[in-house]
Length: 315
Figure 1 (cartoon, rainbow, N blue to C red):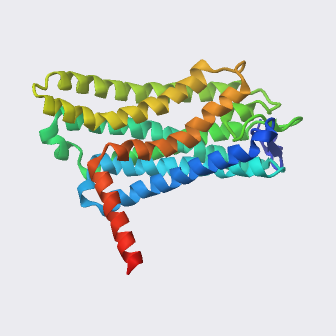
Figure 2 (figure 1 turned 180 degrees about the horizontal axis):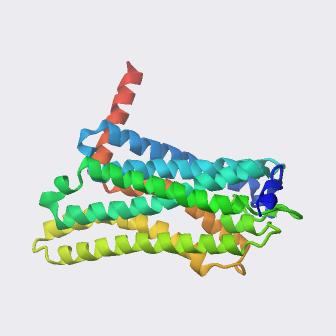
Figure 3 (figure 1 turned 90 degrees about the vertical axis):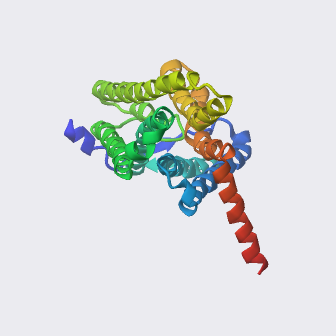
């Protein structure tokens, strides 16, 4: 098996992308470039806002800054290549570049999955134990949770990348996708991919189940606590505390379940590509908007930074 993996060196893949729709090349390029630009500005801007405002130096925004970093890294690992294959006739990608793209993309996805779970636990402590919030969510615990998500994401990605590296690739090397997604790469392998598929299935089910259990348990306790709040003001505050995070969770896990539970090998390739585009390009753009539009402190910091920038230019 190792010999097969070694034979993959020098292999060149061709990303089909949206090449079957040549008339849409310009509109797709403009739309994807606009979304990517907003995503980069939004996520890096969110990190800057959190760093510059002392009011936002709390556990919730600590996790949010890392979520923005992951969204930036994830979209940046896939979108530039997508834009390239739209405008350039040469849609080739080397085997090494393909594996690198998959590794970083997979790392970001798994890490973000558990980052959202850690944020759900943070919301649980904030709503259910507000008096002990700062003690429970200590800087040490927050750092450990974040470090654990990165380590686990990197470990899962390393395992799946290892299985891809052990396969041999021959014959048609056209990947009917715009990125090196796991199942898309497996489809062009001429080796027995059953062990790779099993590894992907086990890791995916384990990660999705564990992260959703943490999220559902946290919000079950939050729901019970909110129901017991007697005043409307307290109820509204508790709900607003969790609304943005719930929206982000529904988008993230909703698209994952659509891609890997609803859609299958018999589904339209275009539908799979569109869902993947929303997952890897649109969601990283939407997350900073979701968290900033409902947050007074974030909006105030943005206004202050904009005001100072305008003043400095006028001087």
